[in-house]
Length: 220
Image (cartoon, rainbow, N blue to C red; front, side, top):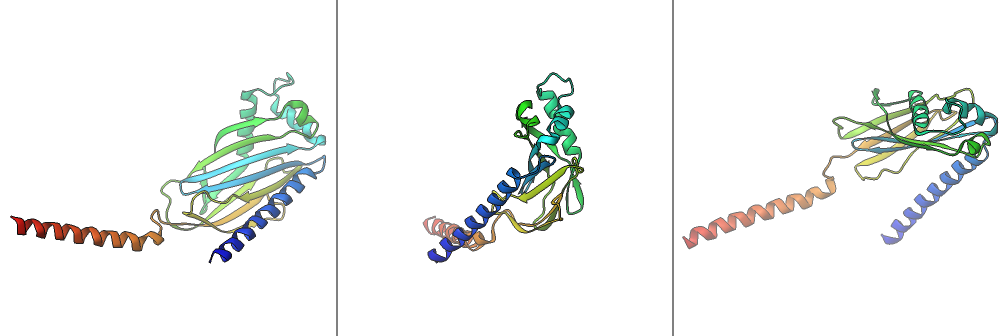
């Protein structure tokens, strides 16, 4: 049993490492005229979190900075950074079971202007969407990014869920990875693995209560 579990863990780590290396190679090798946009999507029972890294190549860095640095002072303020992040989110759509979700910007940061214009900088943002009244069963989450489609190069991947209530079943991407569809299952709040224990505990408590009441009658 232990050997099988260790073997399975090694396979999972190997797959994760391969994906990370592939993403890293793609990120480091993107052409100068591309705008690399890598999304990591986390799914939990109550919502979705999107972490997006945007890395402009040397040939498009000045263009991107001009869109962010609107006052042309050579630096990116918090207001400018958040305004650009809001613009990016308007170009991203997320829906769950064909119902649109509303993304809310949580935080964002960016490399200095010099790094961005030289193709070495990255703009990062994190946004969340709340799922109201989640139901157990299988669900379909669709993510689509059309930001700067003329020069955009895209990566998208669902993260390993932080809770065992969520099980990712499948991930499907279009040819350029602008769109990612994640099929996942949401388990009941109480895992079925605990049901036998819960039932046994309930029976034990009922027997104990009955025995205690009977003993009290005999004493009285």
